[in-house]
Length: 171
Image (cartoon, rainbow, N blue to C red; front, side, top):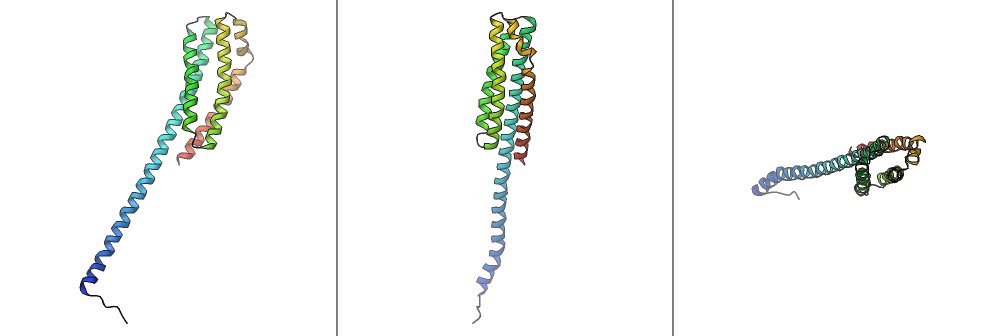
């Protein structure tokens, strides 16, 4: 037996189709807006990680320059620059570890970077102690043996790979 619809039911059915289409369209806009918000959030997160990593590189360079300047000039005023930069580097490493803790692969890379940076900072700490004690000959050993240069190249390579991964994660 065929279904016979009254005029009011037919009008209601005709109105329901565009209303359902509009509701589906609005729902899809909301879905894509949430995805856009998530993408924006991760882009900002990656930018913050990149900014902190560049800050870490800058702190290491300042610490290195401070010790180098102190060694070359025998001027202890470089001590405060080098000490502050070493503290900044350690603080930035802690911040970076927190930022990447949600990504196990990046956390491992950060641990590798931090281990090398900490070795580098330990050498600079040792040089600062030796310079404070007036033992320039011992402080100069780390300049001569090239340990610092090799560590710099390795840290830069790890940082480059770290940044590449952050950029990949953005997309």
